[in-house]
Image (cartoon, rainbow, N blue to C red; front, side, top):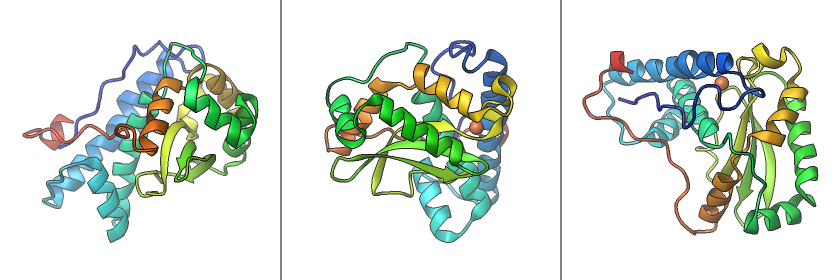
Length: 219
Ligand code: FE2
């Protein structure tokens, strides 16, 4: 069974862009519920997967919509927490080169990221990804749709576009949230390691695996 991963920083570490209150609801309620439902579905089906990536890919192929939604949302949220940092930094090295080549600079990447996120209808996620061949692009996915089933790309960063991610702090102003988020919170060191992995240097991030003996109720 899968365990809700702890946040890699304090609940209030991303404030004021994302408040302590939002983080407590988002991680302890929304993310926790995806993990709990995932475990219940796996247990009910007698499944004993070796990784969350395996669950997502199998559920997608098999058309198991509820299992896919909860597994992918569990993955997306852990990736989201990991791809943020309270220690503001700028992209560097090969990541800067890739951003310059694909977008013409960080400000133009920001413009593209905001346009995609603001223009995305309804719930979902906005991603910066590395495509095979090294080019970077911005994409959005609907609802729980993930990047695990998009084997042609490696995700570098993501921002949650569900209203639960920003409504308490920014109300309906998704653009203000995305702008503040982009300026302060992306973990560019993490993005750089993902970019390197996309080129065969090291391993791309994977979700923590299942914990032997954990029951669904313990999640
Ligand atoms: Fe979320």
